Length: 530
Image (cartoon, rainbow, N blue to C red):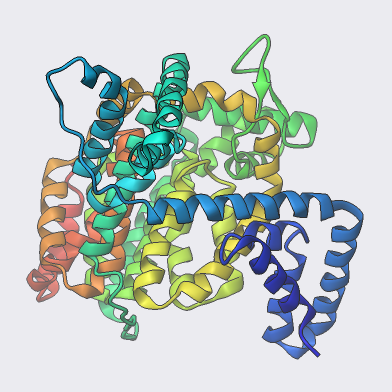
């Protein structure tokens, strides 16, 4: 007897096409079928749960989602057709300007042709997605009709007139948006070439026993930890972002739940509260009650930095060796910007703290722990975790982790679904934010903002990047894969990638760590503020 779940997936593929069937297959059963299939083949003890999920998926499909399934199947087929038409599109003919009145009739077609050539010039072989999507398929269709048949030229001109009306009624913004996305696509292609992603390799990790230099590293972290904890009461919220997060934590303690409405920052009207809650829950937990909310923040200010140093040291120690881990720790501790952002207890720094542990579990293929840690990242910040997912995608394609990565992403996003639905339910509240972030002016200002970085450490990091061998590829992938942060958040890129730059410096500084005296010298260097 044929597997009913496989049969259902085959029907979806038949109706929508390969890969375009996935939304209908996953969403119409609320992920029950794919999870049930995974559990069935994972372990025999899980088959009871698999059967329960299978019947739950059938119930959900019959009672609720069969209409939704039909819509998704139709949309999948439409997208499939649009994709095939894009792939097969090829314009061999040329349009040349002419000095006569007859050419005025061709001018709209010529302008469409010039835009296609501009996309080809900028994006090369990747021009089609930008050209097609930025003009909603209207310009490529009009060019196709123009050269297909003389009778069809009238329809081509009508389409161009329609597009001109849409363009001057605001559709010009789609050209800007898709040009930016096209640049990202070209950046992705560069990453694939730079890391030779299609050339599959395996990860080799050599295990080292605990050594004396490990004890020095741990002692160094403990010294910072004890110093900060002993002086925890001296910390104070030092910027508006910290006060905002303390205010959210205060509301959690007042209401006994995560607030739905932000009436303290956007008074008097307020707006939906959509900021991921993990940091606010931690502050509320440390505070215990409303009166101690500032003290709750102080506790995290005292803990964040040393814990982040430890998790980053642990990751380098696991991936590389004890000397590199020690040096990476020293250089990371020298960056005053990284220290200040940890003291500000920003949610994005919570991702910096969790990420090294996530990478260790991911490299070990520890599925449950990887999903939990990724979910914690998703509940920490709105955008940074998706940069992490992108970088892990690059790594997975290169090193044969794609099967693990797919399951990891699906289950992480399922656990993130409650907060995502909350955001989706108040998507109108983000309209101004989306418009701002998609505007060229904001991109320019975003890139220029907070461009404060340590020129010495970054210069040494670039030298290390150029010299580092393939063992450091995952570090390089995060350094380059995180570059979108540089565009949107400006100098925050340097702060959040400083742990990886520290590893790059350590990659070539290790040859100078020959004896105990050199270890002492590096410890003294760590005291130099930079």
